[in-house]
Length: 91
Image 1 (tube, one colour):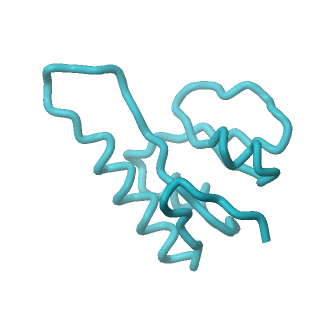
Image 2 (tube, one colour):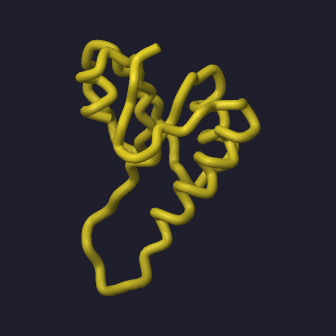
């Protein structure tokens, strides 16, 4: 997200928590476990990347794979390109 904002991109951040206002950042309150909410957040985007995380735990963690599955599926449905290799280029 930081790289995209620094590169002048408009970013939609999806979080269960409140994201404070920043230039070029649109905050969407949603749970990445909710595929329909993720789909709505991705709709209309030009590019996407997954940046999900959680506190360390000794219990199994599925948030990363769940986030990736829902975000990538929504990107595919909407024809959104993925930003790969840590590189974001402005058109």
